[in-house]
Image (cartoon, rainbow, N blue to C red):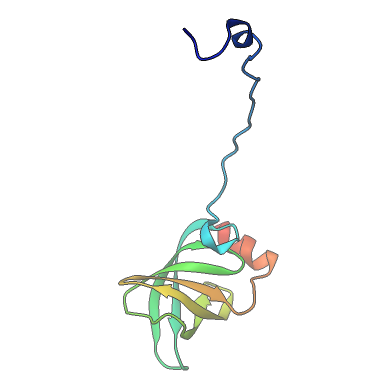
Length: 118
């Protein structure tokens, strides 16, 4: 015997369901859209040596770097972007050979577009 009267079983019908799914660029914890890129840059600390790195994704507020030297979370660097000069950035996180940086001043729309068009 069913747990409910037979006449109740006919009263419940599944509701139609519809959804749209659209692809989205990576946002993650940052809250800003990141665009995958691949270009060489340089960074330095305390006005000293410049070190080569590769930018692997970027937003107007930060970037992910592949590095060849260790960086420490919380430290400040200047990042020299190709053809666009130096930008002060804070190391938000770092592991063996990669780091996430947050730009002190967000990139302008024109600079961001120039970097992501490469």
